[in-house]
Structures are given as C-alpha cells and as structure tokens.
Image 1 (cartoon, one colour):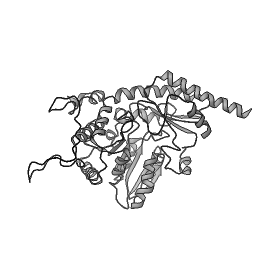
Image 2: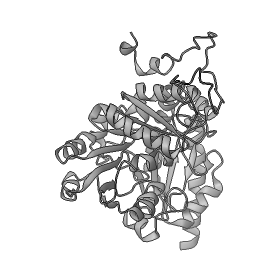
Image 3: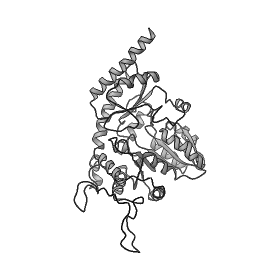
Image 4: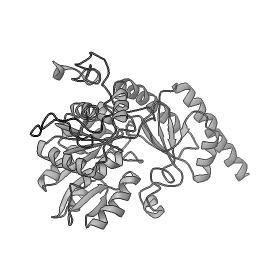
Length: 392
C-alpha cells in the first residue's frame, strides 16, 4: 500500500509513524551511547551509538525511502556527508566536479583530497561534451550540483549518468536545493545522493545535519564502513528534529517555491538588478532539462547587482530577510556568496565562475509574497536614488 502513496503522504506515513511499544505518534529519542548485550555470544542490533542508533536509523530509513534508495546515512553536517562519500575514492583516483560548486565542497576537494593524492577537475556540467572530454582513465566519480550553488546552472543528470556508466564512474548528486520532493536523482541513475539536511529537509534553522542515500547495497556497505570508522554521525536529538521537519517539507517547499517564482519575476524587471538566475524562467538555459528531471524550479534564486556597494545598500535597507549563511528555512535568507558560501574560494576563482561582488542569493521562506515584494522594492529604490545622486 505504501508504494502507491504520493510523496506528500509518505512524508507522514512510514514504518516509524508511531512507536510500536507505546503507540506514541513520534519517534522516541534514544540518547543511550551504549547498549546492554544479553550474552557472550549474542550479536545485538545496537551495541554503540556511533555504529547504530534507533533514532538515527529512523531518519536514515525515512530519507532512503523518500529518495528511492536502499540505504540512508545521517551525518553531523552536510560537509560530513560529502567528505565521507568522497572517501570512497583512493589515492590516484580522479573526480570531475561542477565548477561553481558550494565553497565548502570546493575547499575539501582542493585542500584536503589533494593532500591524499586524489585528483580533480572542475568543469561546466551543463556542457556534456566538456564533461566527456575531461573524463580520464582514473576518473572514478562525477560530482554534480543541480541547480548549482549559487548560479543555478542545471545539469542533465541522465546525460551525466550515461557518461559515468560508460566510463565505470560513480555519479554523486548534491540534492540540497531540490530535495526529494522535487528531484530524485537515484531514479535517474545516480549512485549517491547527498544533502545538507540543515536546509530544506529540517527547514527551521535549528539543526546542522547531513544525509546520504545510495541505491546499491554493496555501495551502501562501503559507505557504512566509512561512516562507522570516521564517526561523524548525527546525534539522536538532531535526528528527531530533521524527522519533524520532514513532515512539513511538501507544504513548506510548495509555498516557498511559488513565492520565489513571483519574486524572481519582480526583480527581473527592476532597473537596479542586472540579472536573475532562476531555472523557473523559460529563457534560463537549463529550463527544459529542469522541467524534465524535476517537479519544480525550487525556492532559491540568485541575482546580480552592479557591485559590492549596491549590495551593501540593499542589505542595509531590507527588513524581512535574514542576512545570513544557509538557506531552506521558514524565514527568507539572503546570502552574499562572495563572503559567505564561497568565501573558501579564491577571488580569482569566484570571478572566473561568475560569482562576483555584486551577486546575492535568496532562499525564499514562508512570508507573504506581497510583504517581500514591498520590502525588496523599497530597498532597491535606495540603490536607484544613490546612483542618480552620484551621477548628477
């Protein structure tokens, strides 16, 4: 029966919808670090919480089901999930990676993996010919962010998967922006899906968490060994918070996406805004691919102002959005990639990718569209006034 339910229903109804012992309609939070073993030769399901915890297991099973995978893994942060997945690689291996990847991922690849002899090449993942041309005999992973952070470039997941399989590579997909509510990469052939569950999945700016899902049992066993060995697991209280957030994922993302599309359209026509990056626009280069592989364009978009001074003016006059790192929360979050999400990327590398000092990223929350519109228009008008005054 559960297989026939829609995603919206599956968010609420799974094997953990109530506690079988008490009937409580909430997953119990099991804080125990260790578990009593019944005898000398007894092999318990749980022995030490780094290796397995009932509350963490509930979250791992939930995300695996939602992504259409066979096994899920909960980590202490999105970067813990990504870093652990990368350690499926060995010395001498090569990874192809989205060029405007999240700054934290850029840092791990360039400053950590490189120290262990793992090679990398950044490519424009929207160009399948460029991807194919950069695959080497030692390429083992093709790493995708789609839409990418922060320029919202759309990668053809199925196209990359075909290249990967033809060259005996694994495909990793960071699905943080879309979540399984809008995009399920494993169904398109990807091998590993990764999340910063801090964002839309938890959704309330009150937990830091990471998730990974695989579609192959053998790969899942390999990833579990790394999770257990490295120990960057998510604590039970935080697992419970993510599980609670998942219950409202559909309605939160539905409203945020609807508001994001309208607000992005408003900014697109404003004279102080030079460009808006949103895959929901028909003229976005990846809009047709986005419509094919996802069930929406998401609730995040980026926009370009003239320069850093214009950014500072806008930020100082906005009242509603939180100006902060992160995204995917109930409140709208305005971020400045050059000094926040991509601060780990050298300036010349940022600018080469189009991440300029005038670029802002907005994650739209649950506020009224009309209130957000008024707030942005009044703040943008200050930039116009300043520009006119300076030129006169």
